Image 1 (cartoon, rainbow, N blue to C red):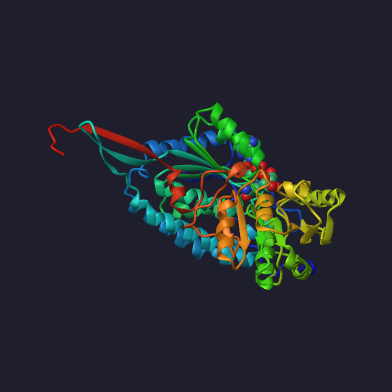
Image 2 (cartoon, rainbow, N blue to C red; image 1 turned 45 degrees about the vertical axis):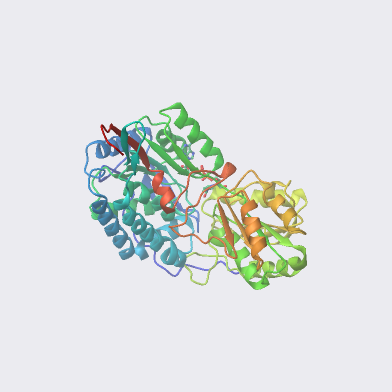
Length: 496
Ligand code: TXE
């Protein structure tokens, strides 16, 4: 395990720390702020305005007004698309600064934020910008002397409640299709990572997106988040986060105005590696699948099933990779794994590791925190585990892999499906028939064959079972921000 390196990149001054409502940065009504923390040290980066229910009300009023009377839903799709393209350009122009915000706020590797997350946001905006002028209904040749057509209209004011593991990706995964559809939004970033969201609000204004269309309210889940899910004037909520909070959001939506919700909740995703796999490639895929973004990724391949013929060799390779991982400052280009996002997650992960040891699993490598300060944890691999153990059942959301051995494809499918979750899965094999059979048998929203975490904006992604419902990315996501209106008219004396 590598050392805890020191930072070499200068953190830019933090420019935006207030709430963004109706096109302006404003203090919260209470005037209260909260500390946003640097997970490298546990120290305060800056204070950010603390939004509560009253601030959510203001933001919803602005979004409502912008939707009911403003130009955004009424302008042509190509005009909306043009502003979204402009926003994408502005993001790219500021990539260094935004990447530094996500790295210092979320403990994410600076180089990856710069190369993947932030350019990915621009790409997501452009994808949906291109779709904005292609939203149309169908003409219905009806029976009984009727003729009809459908309109696909924006659903209205969208509440977006997002987590901290991919602050940028999550922001645009929800906002880009909603904006393209003509919706207006109130976004609540996670309390751990508000900084890049505020930067995006600033850029949206520069791009010409009208006031009130995109509002950002920082705050905690039980207050600002709960106010969004229970709001009578929000027409849809999109959420990514824990299963527990997903339940609360759905209940609040049902108890208020029955707004539709889409939920992307956690996972405990299986990766099945068959005997015919190339061992080096399989080890790369499995390791990256689990330890990417320090295991704080909802699709993490946290249950790795290896066929018995290659099990010993693969275990050895994975342990070597874990030991070679440099854990340290996410700004250092030599570092492979930064700190966990916050103290709560850090403690939760360490307690799962202790639990695993108590349950009788064998700790092959890792298991300890790294350094004297900050939230660093060694890449950790357990073996001698089974599906009844807590560490194999529950989402740990940190750098902890469970490795298991299987004999037959049928056994692997059964064990892979032995989970309440169904977000993602993977298969590594050269046998096309095995790949096809397994991909049809696994109950999960994504199946990656001979790859893992292979995301792209044009590929829809979301959960089966308790991993939630609804899809982010792809044109399917756009549909979640649209509703269909049927228009019907009699047609008289037509011979057809
Ligand atoms: O999630 P929360 P937490 C999982 C992961 C992690 C666990 C807990 O296993 O260890 O959840 O993380 C807002 N009404 N995932 O506690 O609380 C909150 O402010 C409305 C998986 O951080 O679900 C934040 O903006 N909103 C996951 C967002 O919900 C509420 C990503 C997510 O926080 C709320 C993150 C409430 N009552 C965690 N309470 C994934 N699927 O990628 C909280 N929030």
